[in-house]
Image (cartoon, rainbow, N blue to C red):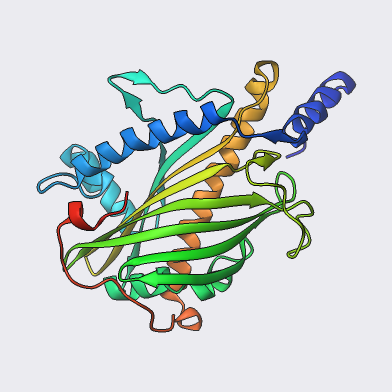
Length: 296
């Protein structure tokens, strides 16, 4: 399909794309509003994970729709939906920021929960599993079921951009068939020259604002002869002037949605491919109370 623009439309299109390219700085009020959004989300997640709650979002649907979606998942379809956390029925405003909140779920047949954990926790090899979106990866530290990791993200579309990031990831085993984890960004620094992996960084909180903060919630459940993987992802980026928001914000949202889909698809491929069989790392073991163990 080819899109034809009139000269005026083409100039507007190019100008809209240029707006997010202007360097900016993360504001304290944006950070505080995003932290509030995460706290309210954490409370909702805790409520869902109580005994009897819907472990996977599919489980919260009416029976007929739930069965239809499970059938689609077992046929290999990836389901994804946009989320929005509200506080007492009202939106949580994030000044000068844009929240991208998605949940996706996929089924991986013929694998075990332990196999899924081995792949997810093999952080030294994430650059292989998730390339080209992850260019470098390293396990920095592990204490019991908490991991400190380094990832260098790289994206070529809609423009080249790269980040050095550090995350703290905590795993909790609910029972013999279910595990959850929460990954929280501890440091995100944009590279000045994204094509160069060893490029100098912008100071943390400065740059073009494509990624300020990231929080990922994984839920893994072994059943039906495989593992269901659900990932709820919340990212914070810069906002754009209202005059351009009608065009630029949907573009940014599409990129964030596709990034999540790519992540789950790559995880499924890695679990199914013998070529990416992970080395033995510190797999989450044992059962304990979530309130005592979780670092969210």
